[in-house]
Amino acid sequence: VTSDRFHTILNPAYDTVVYYFKNGCIFCDAGARAFLRLSQMFTLAGEIPVNSTLHEIKFVTVNAEENDLPWQFTVEKYPTVVFFPSDR
Image (cartoon, rainbow, N blue to C red; front, side):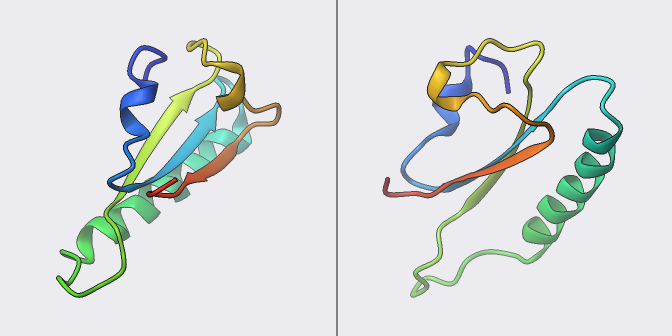
């Protein structure tokens, strides 16, 4: 996700999990593989039952070095995973 599109992912209709990373960070590379696997597991789980209180979950990655985000969405340490719940 780029800084231009960041606000579009914060849709109150679904939960969003954001993975912040930097280029050249060894821990970020390892975390990215785990984040990708986690997103695949949620995708393979299928659709959410109609009577469920669960919301759809979106998984996105943000390269913090290449994107200038608003201060309230920046982080200081990398890698970082932030959960933005629906209905916020």
